[in-house]
Image 1 (cartoon, protein in one colour):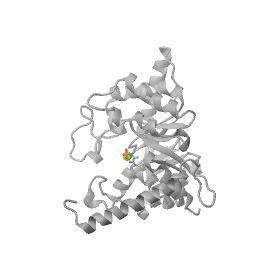
Image 2 (cartoon, protein in one colour):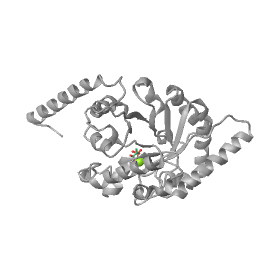
Image 3 (cartoon, protein in one colour):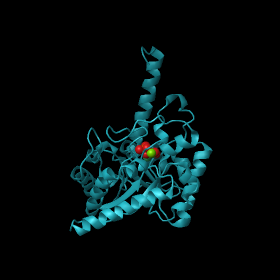
Image 4 (spheres, protein in one colour):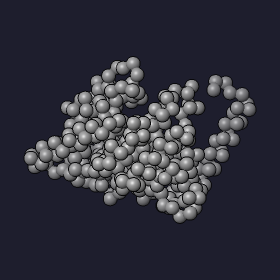
Length: 310
Ligand code: PEP
Ligand code: MG
């Protein structure tokens, strides 16, 4: 807002101090485990990107890392195995025995990586996430080796982004098996982590039964919402449509949660809605008991959970 009026300045001041008051009240929840009013426990993990993100988080305030994005390692040049191994190992050691879920590179869409992603007319529906990794196995295999080696340093889980069909999961899992065998043959210490998928393409949320073999499911509500509502996540003019609280999105989330319960596959949610106090009651009502939030939202999320009566 250029040259705001006195009234606008006043309105933003009021908003800012009421936000600060809510945030300060929420601070008391930070060090406690998250439970609802009815005593239902909810696991709250954090989303991170750069490994240095963990430096400012007290590990005892969270239940682990629910999403480590790795695209941020992919800067002007593609990162080598050692750089990736060190980054993953740092986070695993920080987390001690808590789970750390690292997502294989999700380049493309709203996250272009020079020299890796391709120019496309409709990048959100194009060669992104696991599609790109499978199309460029020489790049993907480097990341896989770094993850397999880092796995011995903590409680690692690995997930694949933008899975649309089970064949993608199976091909990615096969590459993990191949690289593990090759490392073992060379005498390199390594470990196979549990392999799961992001649920962010509607085909998976609508027909999850094809995925009974995966170790876990993590709902990416940012992308799932944009694909269900046909409203780009980075377009302010359609932001009013991009709402996780639309019944179409919540119904899909609830059916994925029910599928997980029936099949005994853990289901979490790592989209931004997980840390949004306005969305948290609906997510818990949809059956989720495992959320991953940006570190700055940790206390507010726990405070919002404490207000839910389920
Ligand atoms: C999501 O889509 O909800 C998600 C967590 O992944 P990203 O925001 O990195 O696409
Ligand atoms: Mg996503």
